[in-house]
Image (cartoon, rainbow, N blue to C red; front, side):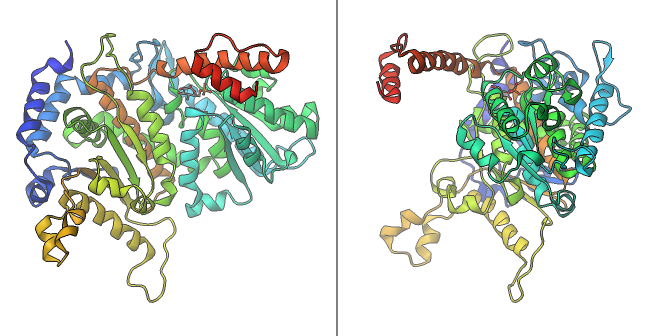
Length: 550
Ligand SMILES: O=P(O)(O)OC[C@H]1O[C@H](O)[C@H](O)[C@@H](O)[C@@H]1O
């Protein structure tokens, strides 16, 4: 039976109509409601009192979680059940950050031991590179790293790199080193990456779970050629290493298996940043100690997620209100608004985590789900977003938003004579925006300010726009990066569990790849043999003719 036919679901549908007339302007005045709609754990305060919801809504959502057997599904994931049923795989990214000595058994093997074997190998290798004892083909230390990968083999590592970059301790550890990411198959991305790099001092890390992704393979060949042209064919052994689950393909490419760092098919690409995918490039740049704190932070949220009852469980609450907003209130979008410049790549990363996971049309049973799943995630750091798309958030469509802020800055600054510190200035905006969205401004209030009657409607803010506020204790440390990552990974899983879909496959990206193959072989034949364009619809045929100039 679809969850949409259950009593808790129907109760929520009815309840959404019943409370449609309530306004956040009034709801947020209730101190008891505010207390009931705040959760604190692992240094994170989640205030969800600005949701279009009452405490009864929350209770009804908790009943939905019961109906969907949310706690059982979370336990099944942590246990290593093959919950990715369409690929017959376990979903065990939580094992990637489990401490040494813990045990998660899959097919008779303790995967935590395997994880730590790879972490130890990364520690040893990254220390050799960082200390200069591992040198390039001409005997020079390798100070620069280009990490080649796309999708899950890129977005998470770049997000964490950007988040670490301005942390004072991480910055000290990274002195004299550079880390870059080459993702797009666009040759412009190659050119940008290689700007100012010397092959003699560059290490290339090829990151690909499958080691078959077209973009990554072409970029890997492109950089192999760059190295070989400058340093000769033997340089590959010193200048190229790989991260993959497909170690045979790594070897076939010409990378020494001793310089390959493995992971496993129970790690989804978009959940792989805590595997060698993220750990290797990050350890090369910052050293293993900082990366260890990041893994510990993610693990702390894993424990919280597994052990805490739903009503106090931060990822679960975020997921429940995600479903409330998108499915019951019909709001298909969601903004991620970190008031922290170092989180500038949070939204692009969570975009993949969430949209690739939950953009599905059928349930686990293969039947079309009778409601839309997934949301359109986007975002920018505040305050930049305020001067860009917030206009629409305030007076256009209703877009549920998450505001993420910190009690301290990575880089505290004070300008003499200014009323507040630079971080307080940032945070003044952080606290103001959720209320502006929730409370709005009525026509009477606008008129009372002496605004001419014809301008009044233009200056009205309807308010009643929902948001979550996540306030993190302290500054954005590696540990906090890990906690934020895990909160959002698990939010996505919660929504998939509630909807009854498989959040861990991604068949929807395949069709485009197949069609690209057909275009690729047409381009090769037309360019090399002058072959006519065949087998495409009239529109694509005409476009290809224009492209080829034929
Ligand atoms: O790591 P790779 O095997 O190269 O895959 C890279 C990416 O490509 C695929 O198309 C998937 O949609 C992503 O989930 C994946 O992260």
